[in-house]
Length: 142
Image 1 (cartoon, rainbow, N blue to C red):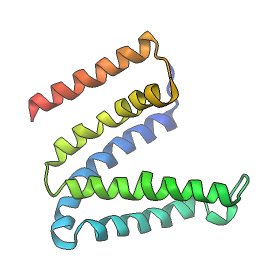
Image 2 (image 1 turned 180 degrees about the vertical axis):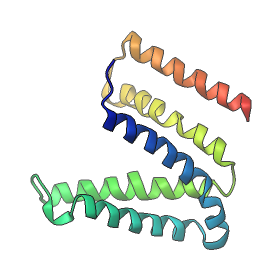
Image 3 (image 1 turned 135 degrees about the vertical axis):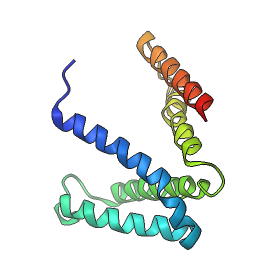
């Protein structure tokens, strides 16, 4: 298997950032609350993202339908999901919250079977088993 250095760097950087955003906000949440923390996080992330890929250089077909679809993904799939995750850090440990996020891809796959009739092969089932085993191993360490 060959992994490009850029992909390896992005993967490792993403892992570090996930750990960071699960642990660091506890201090901020106590002082400012989850809505303020998430709001500022989204503003800062938007500014950085806009530097990398400016909003005025949108490629593709922009119409009312595509704007509504992007708004739904941004509001429901990103903002509200992240707000719920950050707010949960007030009630559970960051390590437990991190472990519970491992269920998200499994749940998405199960729902794709139910909703879209997706079929899995042996490799995917082995992947699910490995995810569950890793979650149970990590849970035992808590």
